[in-house]
Image (cartoon, rainbow, N blue to C red; front, side, top):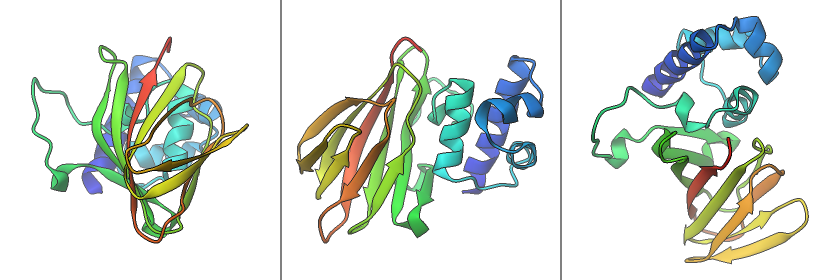
Length: 185
């Protein structure tokens, strides 16, 4: 978790400097306080998934770009090294497996929901598409206009610029593999 906080601080500061912005400017764009942003830049804060989404949406960048470390030509990804964030008292876990790269235009996540866990995601920016596949368990995906029940092996693709909720409907852990694709962003 400490490494992820450091990565967030480095990436946030990098974006701010590249754009010639102050912490006040970013606070206005993201609706996250200047004090909290300053703590994040110093690596002294563990923000929630929702807070990081506010920053990503406000800056019109990918979620994982705020969590990634320096780039290299190749990288083996071991489960123990994958950065993750939690919500709902640790019952919802997001693992950033393959961070966003502008050349790819997408990022890849593993999401784990404990039994009966529910997580509501704020709408992402325009042009974002989510593709998710249920690896284990079952769940309901609640979109603004419909609820879709998914079982192991099912895949759902939807526009991410709408409120959406993931609900584990079974008595065991449910696992999702998710690709977030940034189209026209």
